[in-house]
Image 1 (cartoon, rainbow, N blue to C red):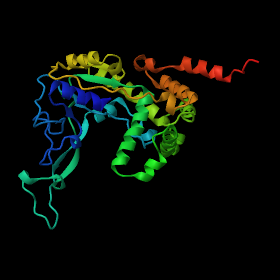
Image 2: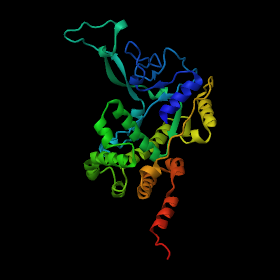
Image 3: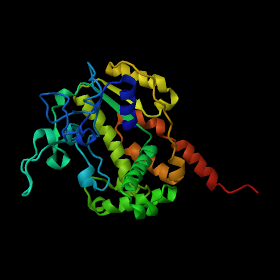
Image 4: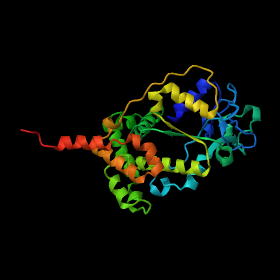
Length: 322
């Protein structure tokens, strides 16, 4: 959802966006171009050479915090303060301070990536003027992470991994089992999660992702409220229901022009009924409801089909009439 929204706004406006993450926008000399002259720690311009900078607001990519898939609760559970810190944090390339023993230090004009080092950086929260809060169905969101992992392993030619975790329901469930096992020890002894959460975890594949998903939206709302930011909530599914209207809403919010035709939007598949059993979905929805703050649940309730799932389960369990 984030990548599509960024690309879409760039194509429709013909203007550049920005990102916290310098690896996404490396210039030929190996450097990154900060959006603001007085903020070398970011954000960084995605297309500094071939697109102009918007006059008012620049759409900027940040993932914020609490996203570590291989961590246990001690590392993925965040506070509003640590979450905000992650929202403002990224990284960029700088020239190496020392050259290798047998190398002469390159001149600035000939620097390439081997002459650079990547450093973490952050910028002042005062630079943030507006926020777009993008929300996607939790089940589709989780499966998209699995597909992203497959994409990365394909680029790395990890054939054994791809054979172990194919793009099927069985492959997904196996991958979840592997991921769940990584955090099991931490979750078992952690004081940061209660017994109800621990009990639900046992019923949910990739249970940590559902916890992180709910926490992320809780903290995003909290941080935006604390910063007193004008905020636009965009449900990814709005692109399917009214693509043009959803795009116009984003452009109006950011005070951006529509200079080019809309790129095609191809709706993704719905995976909840393909990759999860009814019981797994019920447990995951119960976990989300339990963890979600009131305002968060108001935004996520549209994805709650508990009643439908319970009715279907009851029908399946009812003895057939003679």
